[in-house]
Length: 60
Image 1 (cartoon, rainbow, N blue to C red):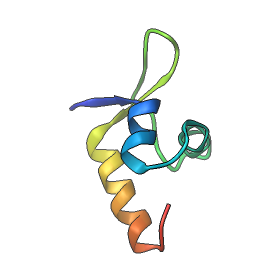
Image 2 (cartoon, one colour):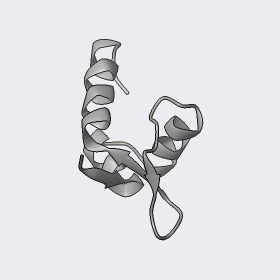
Image 3 (spheres, helix red, strand yellow):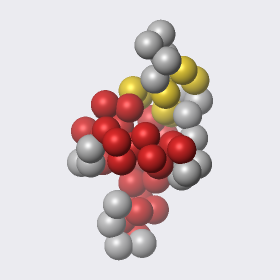
């Protein structure tokens, strides 16, 4: 399992960091752990699945 920071997820999805934080707050992306700085860490596979689902539904 490879973990991604909020900034890495934002870059991968092509959105702003605040959008990723909102997705996590709304439980659309579930954080697997917290980093040393307290920021959320996401499973790379979960992020890829979210991106695929969002594309099917019309975009992020």
